Image (cartoon, rainbow, N blue to C red):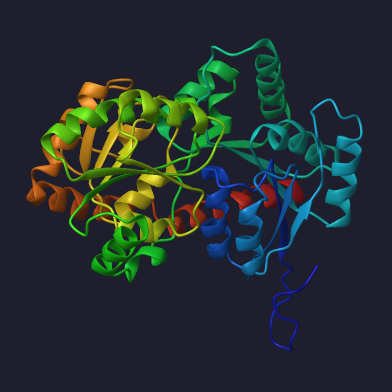
Length: 394
C-alpha cells in the first residue's frame, strides 16, 4: 500500500483500495454516475479501481474513468452460472489488494459480494432500480440470487431514494438496518459555465430546425419502461397548441425500433428526432426548453438532477423516487404514468408560460444544489467506507 506521506514528521497512513464491480460501462444512469463519484472521491484516503464484467455499446464510460486516472479492468463473466466466475473474482481481489468492494447491477451484486466475503472484505452495494415483479422465470431466478447474495454477503445496501428503499425491503426481505438511503449526486461543475443561448443556436442549426423552435427533450436508455411511447402519443395535442415544437430523444436501446414505429403510426415523424447516444448531455439540456421523463418506474433518475442543473422545467411521471426530486408546482409538473393526455396538458401549460418555466428552472437549480450534489454523496460514501474498513480491521 502507498502511504500518504512518508517524509519525516508525517505520520504514516496507508490508502485504502476500493474496487468497484459493475456489470458494464455503457451509458446507463448507474454507469454514468461513477464518473462524478470517483472524480470527487478523496485520493488522499482511497485508491479506486473499476472492474466491468460485460462490454455494452463499447463501454464508453470506461474512457471517462481512465481520463480521471482510474484503472478500468474487464473480467468477462458471460452468465451467472459460469463456474469460473467466483474463483476469478477471488484472485482478482487478492491481486489488487482490495480493502473494500462496492458492487452495482445484477451480476456484480450476485457474485461480487460473495467473492468479497471469501476474502473477509467489507462490501457495499448500490441498488439503482425498482424492478417490476411481473417478470419471466429466468429473470425472477436471477433476482432471487441477487437478493440472496445481498442479504447474506453484503454489509450495507445503499438505496438511491426512500421510496426505493421501502420497495427493496418489501421484495428482498432484507434486514432494515442493512439498507440505507444515499441520494445520487451529479457534478454541478459541468453545468456552471454553459452559454444557453449559444447552445440553443448551435443545436437548432445542427438539427436543421428554426432558431425559434421549442425543444422538448428526453434523455434515457430506450426501454419500454421509460414510457417514451406515451410522450410520442401526446405530441399531436401539444402540436395543435404549439406548432413550433420538436421532441428530441437522446439515447439508444432495444426499444428504439418500436418507438420509431410509434412515431410513424401517430404521424409525427417530422417532429421527433432520435439523436442516439450522446456524450454532451449538459449542452443538449442547456439548449432545450422542457425536460420530459414519462417513465413507468424509476428509483431515482439521475437525468432529472441533470435537467435541474441545466435549469430546465420538468414534466415527469409520479412514480418511484421521482417525487423526491420533482416537487409538483415548484420545479416541475408530476403526472400519472402511461397518460398521454396528462403529458400533453402539462407540456402545453408550461410552453405557454415562460415566467413559470423560468421559475421552475431556478427552483430546480436550488433543489439539485442542496440535495443532489455529488460532493455531498461522496462525503457520505467516504464515511461509510471508513466505518466498514475499521470494523473489519478490529
